[in-house]
Length: 612
Image (tube, rainbow, N blue to C red):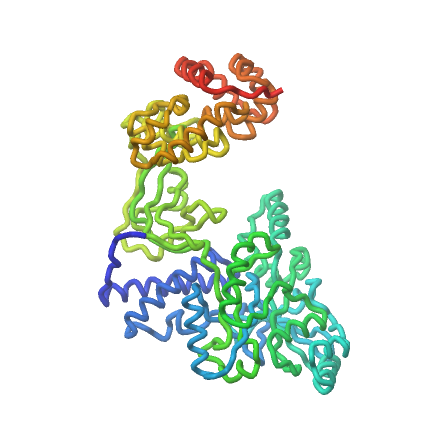
């Protein structure tokens, strides 16, 4: 976390920031609800909304009726008929931490003192909420949520979803008796299903597999790709031509009933929906207390990537319907239900500076220094900007408010600049003409995109090359991480990777990070790697364009390091999966006099296993 103190805004500064936030939030609400477009993720949108809510909390006199925090957005599209919801499709409050979830429980418990609450925890599917209406067992109308009171009639498109029955399945008496319903309740349910009106609520979704397959097709047809499954669902359901919707292979899951069928518990609604012929989420869980809800939430967070569909949290519902009625509604949302969100994969923050780092191959990479922000449960203060072209493409300036995400939930990167929040004080950034580490002039590589320090003795290149040598994919020396390598370099104990094998326990014990045991463990780990496979050996050399796959291909073709270093350029280029760039890189590396000396030095320390 940063040691910087939070800047206290004056009333005028807060007013200016609030107005900018309202403008940006309203624009993105309009894009999503009216134009079926989304330029930012839900997580990024939430951080903007949270910032506005915090500012309004600190400066309540600045709250206005037109603030996005004071109403639920969502004007119905003009191309579909409007539908009034007899039972409003309410919005949910959000909880982003255990503390916020506990606060929600405390608030509602005060309204029903002495009542024992059980909770039903549901997967919060990331799709499009819709309402389905059945009369005399037949599907007659489907509508979107819209603003909660008025949605859009999308019946024809919903009919194309195979998991939505056009005629309700008649529930059998035995099934209902097994759930504990009385004869009178069972009679009412069956009569309503057959002769009355039933309204169900659920989520239309697109599975990850279908989403990926559709994008492959669109890519082959040179058409714009779908941004994410949620956007794909919204766009598919709002198609005028239902044939297009049918081709999108959407799915549907019920999460509740808007009709009283005699159910006394919310979880019974899922059972009833299943008996009526609908899909429900089998992973949903009935929880006796909030601790169980939290454990369920944490387990889902760990396995969410393995699920066939996108989820962004857990919906926590007070299970007893009698208590739901007592708790009622506040504003546009029910008190008895909240969304316990996962830590966002994206967040908004500010670029405080841009610095340049030099990699093992000499490539200069710009790195954004960020105002610390939490993304996916991790506090992020740096993010890669990749290269100069990416900075230009995104239009990034120092001081910009940006959306930052974690690619694959691991590497933070800047994804979008929020132009509407610029103050005019932002500064342009230019890549350096000289290496920021060694001061040598940099050159642009063949692609024209990357800048590279060509000084082989650049301290940064040397350090990162050693990090790579000891990494998992190369020599995999346990305990020899970046900090240890930097310390060994600073103390002059190593100058190249061959020197690693000449280290002694006595060299290490005197260093700050090492005790007798840790020194012995590292020396043992180094000795263990004196015998190495040919592919790992080649990876460890750090030759440009040579990764795991290429190292494997070279090993299979030549079988030994001696054969490889004698190989001609033509023989190298003929190998499958070895392009001219990689062939040239390998050929030139083995003919460089300094590399020859280093290779001979390294081969005196290690033995390469016979490959074939």
